[in-house]
Amino acid sequence: MRRLVASLAAGGLFGLGLTLSGMTDTTKVQGWLDVFGQWNPTLAFVMGGAILPMAVAWPISRRMYHPVLGGAFPLAPKREVGPNLIIGSVLFGMGWALAGLCPGPAIASLSFGGWGGLLFLLAMLAGMLIAPACRAQIDRISQKRSPMDIRSLTPTYAVSPQIDPTDLPAIKAAGFTTVIDNRPDGEIPPDLHTEVMQAAAQALGLTFVANPIIPGQLGPAQIAAQSAAMQAASGPVIAYCASGNRCSILWALTQAGTKSADELIAVPAKFGYNLEHLRPALTRP
Image (tube, rainbow, N blue to C red; front, side, top):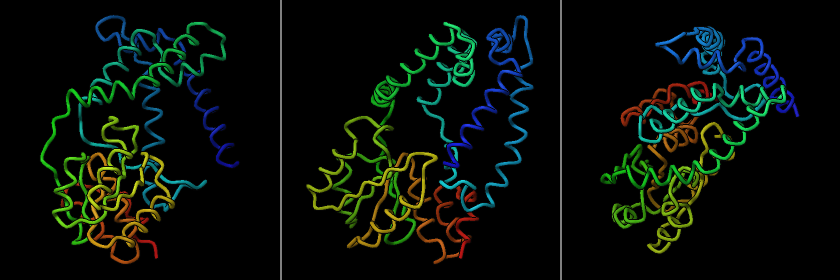
């Protein structure tokens, strides 16, 4: 209940800020994007006002084990730039420039009873519904399969970017006995979904564990599930997600208290995974 009340208060404050700053006025947003015309810098001040409190909040969060109202902090932002990010950003910017609205102001504008805001919101929801199918199609067209990349954090635990069923024979030949899937089906095309991977793994005699991690929703239950799968394994374990980052985070959190925070951060760092933001959680007794 406290989280719901806090969410309501935060949403109300956000909407009030949008209204007071005039961001529900589509001409101001379009004026910000009209760089070569009648440029309106108002949006820059609004963004700056939002960045300042977040610049304080992020360092504070790094020293906390979990949010004040429970749950878990979001995962570190992805650093890789791919077709989905570029295409999504361009489409978002085009829609913003044409309508002068983005999701927050669109919801706030409903209070004024405008049909334009309602139409935009309905179109936005429709776009969100068809986005997974579009993303899967983009993945099929643009994603080139690279050789399987196994990154061993320990002799018995390795991580990997996304694998597919054709990789599983090589994984078994490498001595792995358990495969852990840390990637939600919503991020990937149907031919890589959990049920497909599980059937292919079990056909080879591999143990398959689904423990999907949605960004921003990593909590004690997922950590415990990863730990249980690792402990129950009869041999080396390989876990996969989009890049291997989430699998590395889970490994570090399952080992908290058994190894120093420096070691738990240094091992994944060898493969480009930055877990420094987890230091407070990794130093707990």
